[in-house]
Length: 225
Image (tube, rainbow, N blue to C red; front, side, top):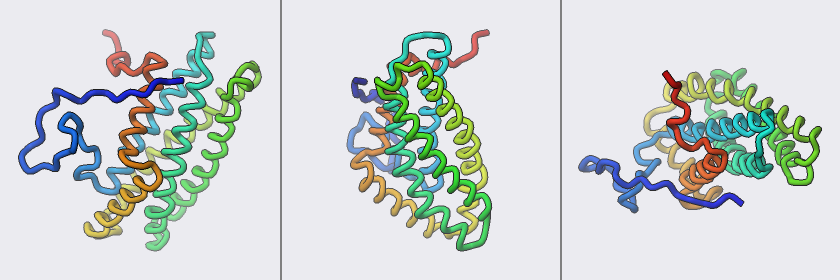
């Protein structure tokens, strides 16, 4: 089992006077002052880190290095709970209907919806193939890597198109007050679906998997001169 852990944020500069204060003085509130589109983009960061985990785990398998099936399974579980059952549901419930009602970017929305459905099928396949019994088979490991690769190939352009086209356009269709109200509804859903500090706990989970793979240290990704 991967051990749970919370990265310390002590030592960061104090918040400016008048800024919202978090309950724990050593932690920054990730929701303070964040609008609905920014919140969705922030959540894409969790998804991107999951894609990185898939890539590193596949690299290890190809190089015949040791990698636990739990790395794939726990990452897929996080994608299911955080991305598919929370993040995407919010998009489908609150964001996509705005564009459909305004008859704007409808083709894009329909493609995004179909990709949500396809992604859930791929995640179910990854979960099935990453159980210890299934993972022992070389053929199943090959299928697992193919499934992860197809997931990555779809979601990189998927989230990029949302971040650069769909979410910025939301402000052109809604008033500032409507954007604020939308953010409040999404925040309520976060507590209902993920519980208290759902985003923070999801970030902790992805960080623990990164640590188990040895890719948590951001400096490792800096090109050497």
